[in-house]
Image (cartoon, rainbow, N blue to C red; front, side, top):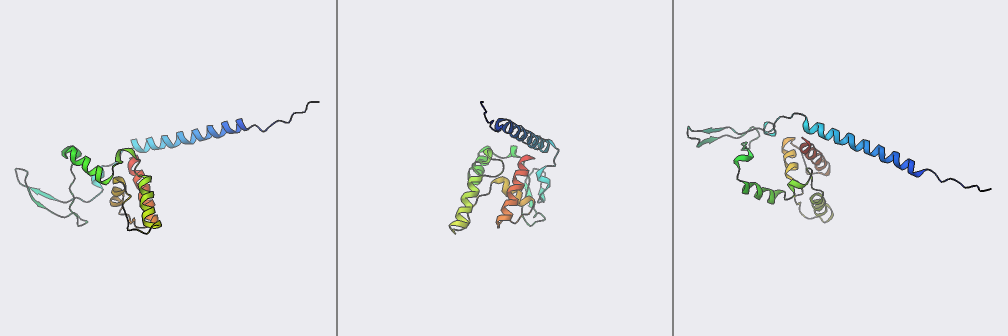
Length: 159
């Protein structure tokens, strides 16, 4: 008698797990695409703007504070010199075009410096995270506030 014990069917279980994982990934991708394609109002409408008064030749005569006591004017990117844009990106967020709203390496570096080594705070926020902080008036000086800022930054990137 050749009684051979059968091993459990791991490949079948593995295939089901892979299939379910693929379905979950497909649903998440479909949600991300739907969020991206859903109509959104321009970001410039979410923050209070200063009032600018110009003369008939376009020269600025007066600039009033916005409702939040800051000077803020919207300017289309096409009106800004490309070298200025690159300079801001280099200084503020060198990886801007390569991350999904958060830069994990910068966050870890800033957390390590601040909490593990006790050094003064260093920046770890991306430009998108800074926009999220301004747009939703987030308090980001605590780990919970920083986490909320990161989630909002990813939300902005999906829009």
